[in-house]
Figure 1 (cartoon, rainbow, N blue to C red):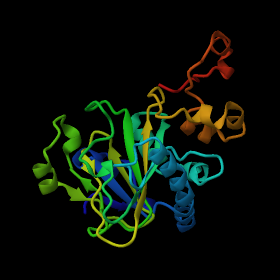
Figure 2 (cartoon, one colour):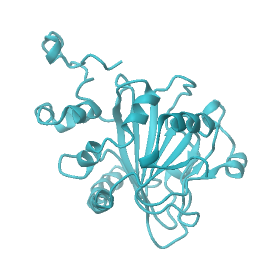
Figure 3 (cartoon, rainbow, N blue to C red):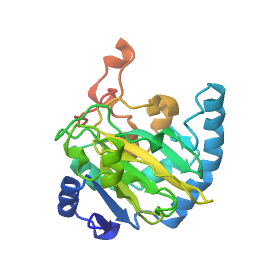
Length: 267
């Protein structure tokens, strides 16, 4: 495929050309094997916790194998974010600093029918040339035709009309990628998880990164704790949203610049 590159040889010229033409790009050999294995290990207990809540709240029907909001102090998430994978590309795409909007995962199993198999895009409103969000998939098992490699409708990021299923499945490409690869794509792109016809799971992290003023799906700084954030590196504070918080009262609002909830350089 013309939109697949080795991560070590990536450059912004190719990135721009590929994202304009296809709306998505695959970077192979993007993550070390030990980080991939840690993620897969941690997903087991993470899924059990989230599945119990889904079942208890009566929303388990179409959420098989889906995990949401995996940012936790003790799991893989902070180590992964510290890698700053595709940092240069995402800053270029979004025109400056960015934050993590959401971090989830999909464990695609045989005969499962989660909502991510529906044709969808990951931003509710079409934004055209205004780039507010970029999506990332971290490939945790080889993506193949048999195990449900994601359908990606190339060029669909250029228009606002949702394709019908006949057109979508007749024209969509498949994100065939090796374990350890990363897929970046425009949030305006229409896509859908494929069906897994094998006896083995097909796992992936699914993330959205946005301009800092875009509201996070879950308030990660508040969840982790403001004091916890004081011990993080400046890069982790940035991507987790500690530099673009919303004051909750006048005391938090009236602060000198260096202590303000919303820092300079956040758009």
